[in-house]
Amino acid sequence: MYGFYFFNFTYFWIMVPALIVTMIAQSRVNSTFAKYSRVRTMNQITGEEAAERVARFGGVNRIFIKRVAGNLTDNFDPRNDTISLSESVYSSVSISAVGVAAHEAGHAIQNAEGYFPNKIRAALVPVTNFGSHLSMPLIIIGLILPVQYDFIVYAGIILYSLVVLFQLVTLPVEFNASSRAIRALNDAGILYPDELEGAKKVLRAAAMTYLAASFTALLTLLRFVLIAGNRRGRR
Image (cartoon, rainbow, N blue to C red; front, side, top):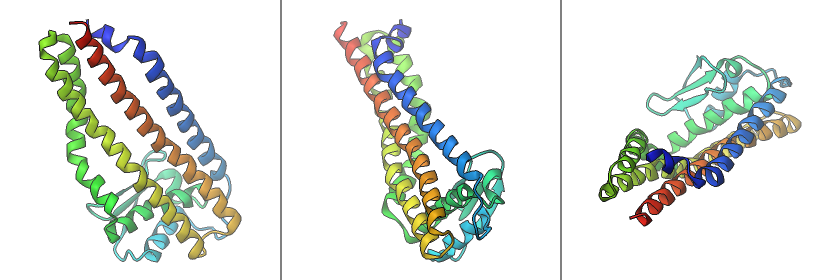
């Protein structure tokens, strides 16, 4: 019975558009990153060096930078002040590498300055992890059980709402990190103006993936609400 609820009409007019938007965003970031990965910076600065210089320029005096496996697996861990750069970024002297590395350094600057949206995002991590693991099982179990157990479905929806909230809070954090990165790359003279335009395009494309994730999360939440409401109407 729960299969009907998950593959009813809402799947086609809600989830299909979300899937298309996600695919477009991912394709855009991959193609843009690949394009500017072939363009070397005039200063021949690597991703590692760019991350360190941007962080120092932003007033971060204690930062660790390491190489990690994978492609576009770059991240900043505030727990140990570590910027992890992927293999395609760490030692590359391309505009893409410098842009991505500078973005992660932007997160390090946010953390050092106590950027408020970043604090909210960090506070949401534990509850978001909890919600992401339990929301779907609760929703599925609630749909299998008789209608009088609808409270289980709604409990799952509430938990999934935490995931949506986390995605929405992530947006200003990511946009701000990119803004800090571009400003530092310019003001510190790390990139020339035409190179800076390339870095902006790389980071804009990356921003689309966060927008797509938020869009998908919101539509998924809407779908769950509609499924629950439709189930209640079948009483």
